[in-house]
Amino acid sequence: MKKAKLLLPLLLLFGPPMAGPGQVVQHAPTPEQCRADADAWGIPQWSILMQNQDKFTALANGMMGNRTVSAKELDARNAEFAQCEKTDIAFSGRYAQADRAYVIAELGRMADYMRRHNLMEQFYSEDDQGQR
Image 1: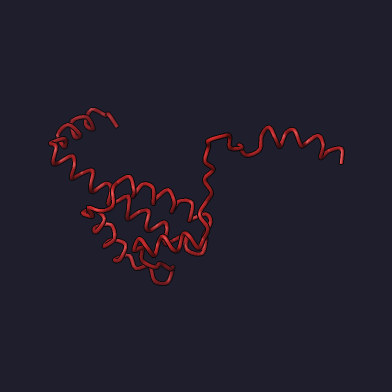
Image 2: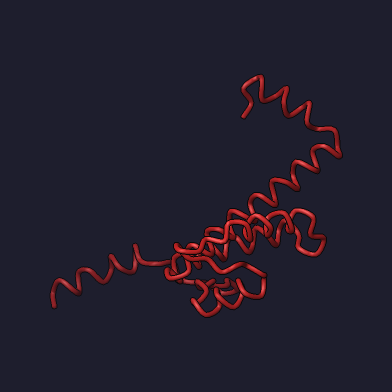
């Protein structure tokens, strides 16, 4: 009991931060929420035996030209999928593949932006100079 009393101040000092007034505490999504969002966002099913890589490639290609889902929304979905990989281990491969598809889509959009704004030469020039 004496040790517990000594540890209490350490737990309060080094424990998880408490939310103050006006702060929002974000909780990891539940496995049910992860699965529902993945279904709603058209994420293909995935398993070790049946990877459906073609479906994830199609997802990435579809997201590149999708005018209704912004790059910021793709980032937000990826942040959720990163949490889902930890909280819904049974479907972690599905979330990892979705994350890759969204990153590929966003990189494709960035490349299109660079071409439209004539930034490719500047990119190559700076890259040749070691600016990475």
